[in-house]
Image (cartoon, rainbow, N blue to C red; front, side, top):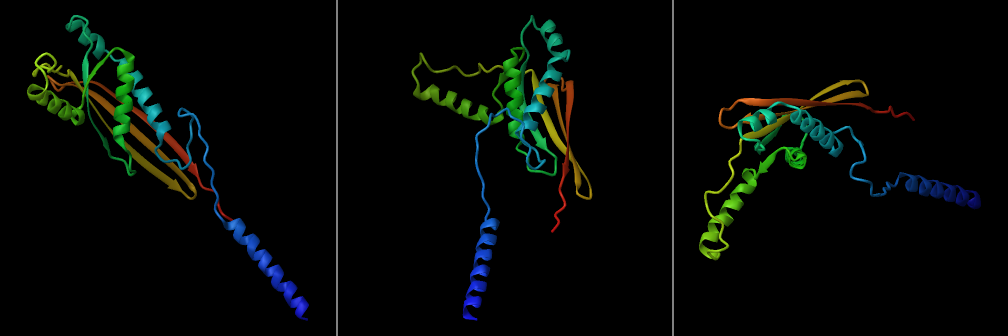
Amino acid sequence: MRRSRNIIISIIMLLSLVFLTACQSSYSVSRVSSDKDLDLSGSWNDTDIRLVSEALVQSSMKGAWINNFRMKNLGRNPVVIVGTFINRSSEHIDTAIIAKRYEMELVNSGKVDMVADQNFRASIRQEREEQQYFASEETAKALGREIGADFLLQGAVRSVLDQQGNTRVRTYYVSAELIDIETSRKVWVGEETIKKVIQQARYSL
């Protein structure tokens, strides 16, 4: 009797150990290429940033505003400053990453010149002012030599979520526009849309 009881207890303990081992969470980490498309949750991610930035830059480069500006300014590249990209979606999205990626694409195109935005301009001006007192006359940078921007780049991110049962459709609208600083005229407006279908499997016992 005692032997049978011990066997039963041993079986229960063994099954409990197997169950606990199976329930333990495990994870692994692997490095992948930064341009590999990965989408785990359906939320906004780095792939979306890359696709949106590339599409909007290509659209803006095809606009007539660059050629129009060059014709009026002896072939000079237009100078652009990055303004604010506003997050109007329901998610936490770091729009500064979008703005920076957009800026990189514009600079690398060779068709547009960029100047420092407001966040960096303050530190540059402070450094320039301090040089007037602490740097030698030969190396101190002169005041009043900044290049004025011709156009301001700004944009916004919006999102719409539609859901039915275990299926969700999440749509992102990323808009951007270039504004003539002197006249406040919009010379280009573009929008890129990303739509994702997220299906959650039903759990069954």
